[in-house]
Length: 495
Image (cartoon, rainbow, N blue to C red):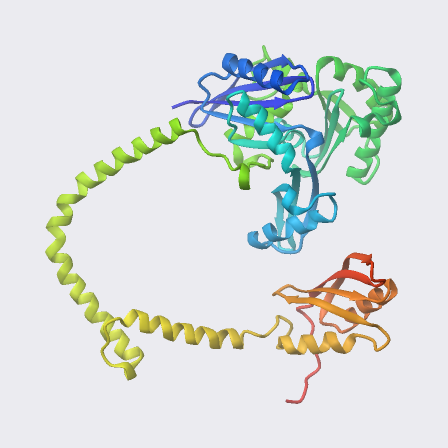
């Protein structure tokens, strides 16, 4: 059974949509559609409503994307693989880099790579008011998107359609309002950055059509590519360029001159699942096309979803009722198939239950003979397990550094503090990988002395100072992350 997926990309001056017909194993890009917008929010909603009625009627799933200026992101490498720790750490790693509190933003992330050393994630952040405004426009248009992604990130999924794609290449997708630059190495995303109009055109900011704007944009793309690549671009390095036909035509020669590399128009290379009749349109619809691919082939795509917390996606009441009817019919069928079986097995179940209870009593008596026969042996066993767990937790107060205990580690940290340094500790936390300290010191120099002293203890493989800043009281507030050196063998001590 096929389903219709429609992805919507709302820009500053237009709305674009990609319509995909997806089956069990195959899918087909049905078409690309575009509609001009005016600046009035009410007019935008009305235009989108008419646009959806015309091109997305009967859609099973609708997706949308935020524009580049509404989203910020960073690539983070975290020294652990556990999903729970990654989810807990990402918001705090982003907090110091944005002018918002965590309560004012929506955060999501995509895992790029996992190695024995840790996890690399692409973490994205959007202010709540941007997500709310985006959903208000769509709601007024009668649209409830399942996913709200970031347009620049969604566009990267279009690259999966390139036939015989090289393992290392660059990708630039742009318009007069923003430009996305991405680098791939060994077949995987290595870095991505989105330049807004101000960042892209610099002092020559305009509509991107003048010679000065084109030159400024080419120069900024060059510096961005050099930063992402960490080295000059090779002469034959593959670079794909996407955008409107006019924009690509105006930029390809300046980019070849400014950057180097082997530049290729995305519309000129074979794209799987895209009919040759509409292939030339694909470079202008990379965001909406990539967003649709994320829904259809989620296993090898990049994406985030800002429909979280108060913005969590809920299906319409009609879909919910339809689902409940299906569930109800299935439930009636199950009841009809099982009710006779239940009655036939009732007597047998009673016998088996008595046998099981007898076995439980035997196991209980053998495990805790002091209690004799009791009515609720499982409750007594659970109490005994809880007592034993408390003992284990007490014994588990050993840190993963040789056979040292948490007290040994705390003693080593305390002893490492120079007498000349004043430190007020507000929080001391220890987990299997690190010790985390929130404290105040008298000077920045004292903070650096503490870092070196802690590193000299041998208990830590790395000591990092984060968010060190002067306070209004005249001292220095800082966070310190001390990674445990699990290969360290402290000298033996007398008991």
